Image (tube, rainbow over all chains, first blue to last red):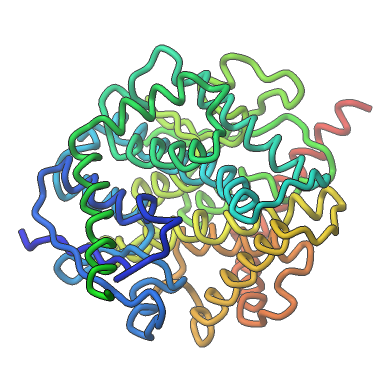
Length: 216
Length: 216
């Protein structure tokens, strides 16, 4: 099998370091034991070639043989199917992982993202829309908390859905959103104590630190 | 093959009618020509059984044989794979549809949702966070506009990704967000002029209208 290639930015500001989504791909590939390499695309001047792989001008994208896939959820599904790991082979187990993969992104990250944008903007004004969005996040986290109580992972075994969900929750916890959700916090701790996560995180931080040193 | 079963609410207020996500499942099943039925779950008293199928207390979920799947993206992928339609069989074509399926939900709906919450809240205050979220939506719509210019569909043929993307854009257009994005508007018109969409929409509206009549 050809090696997998992750493309990420050559450099990013300090704030997103440790949270750029190439982390999710690195993590999945480490868990699956698949060979991969990482290449860079410019953060500051995004080319037509960049947009041809990632039409929103974001990173990462995954290249393998003749396919080029953006969206971390799509990348993880592809990696799991190619690796024969991180997703069960039987139909019910597979569909359970896929529904939670979408849920992490579309039911939870959708609620986390506005919260983080308010926080990054230093905006604490409690307008009606803001209150509705905060209530939306609390409701979603409450449902995840209830589901995770007395469960180690979203499905029977650790899967690509846990990579997405734990990374999404980790982002919210950066701003203290999990203070009242102990099962969510423990779940994030459980996921991020895995060697594959630690290697993925360290490798991402080192990737950007190397870029800094190149600019000195 | 067993029939597919969509579960949706027995009733909803006027505002979400025509936009409840069972529409996406109805539409896909109509396009695929698969037999299905629709059952109701109470909107007002959401039971443990409801949460066992949909842990966020939302609708719809899809039941088929021994699988029960929530998340419209997961449902559409399952329907397409079972029906052998709305997604290509070859690896590159399949991965192209899957990445756009995730993109509609995670790159675009994530930006549309806060906008609609502000609109539903009647909140027009331009706080820094609000401005950042509005800019996020404009950027995402601009990228979709550029991509859709001179294209009929997201990939070579109409697919499950188009069901998601056009429905997401349709929701934003309810509040005029597509005024400056003619290719997006034309794309929504193209998608929603399909007979399968029209039947799905009419059937959803009739489902809730029937509930109203039952309460008179």
